[in-house]
Length: 375
Image (tube, rainbow, N blue to C red; front, side, top):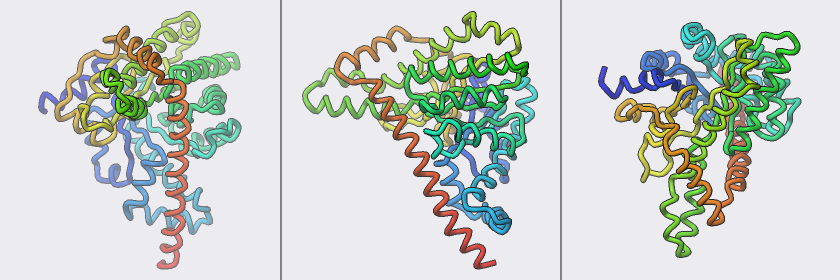
């Protein structure tokens, strides 16, 4: 094994898990996911966009699609049943990691219907149902961190559902997700429930923040504000580093100490959207700069392979915290409103997942009728 290949395992030794941000039936059946697990991958995340590419781009799902359609399922049921099959298979591959880490790692994530992002009760009902259907201890239900999603996260955790709180862009939203985790576990404990095997991550999106802020900077530098150029590529990493500081305050505090004594795990920050969108930046920029204990970095295929090829691993997450605060303060001082930026990113993120879901089910509906007609 090369020196660079070892760096993926080195992330684990530094306290950071690597989860793969991709899924397809071929990835599982071909043994490729097993190879990635051997390489150091310890979890997997999915979303409607990923499933849309997987299902519409191959014939691997045709047999399942036909079988579920003949069982009388509507198109939404067909998709969910196929997704459940995949996530169960992934969870089974990750089960040895889950057992070896005593439930701290080895999770596969599946999202609730993205059209429920503004429906608290609907999200809770969907999350409970999917979690029960998956019937695996090492799965997480992804819930968007919308205002309506926050109480849903707490209620699902109280019910013993592992939750991946997703689409977090702002420090304020991260604080709310932390509060939902604590209050959910506290309610579960008060009711006599076991909090030691309820796991959660807080998925903090990274590169999309730079894409949005850099676009605003470019617009302003075009107006003659050339000094702003130095702030490009700074916002996302600064945002994430300050989120980690907030994480330490919460999980080293007195309130969590009581839950920890009852066996509770920390809710780990997860760095999502870590592919580099701007070709001017390093393709491992959002990996190398965000390495720290009790965190997860979820990597799409190209970013994972880039890091294996030429990435380096050292503890970097707590470097430059003061500089991170200064970067965000400087952006605010020149009129770039981070609250407005992150609010729009959340709205756009929810819409993107809903649109991907709609495209997926539309293509599925056409294809399943073709399969039924041909068989």
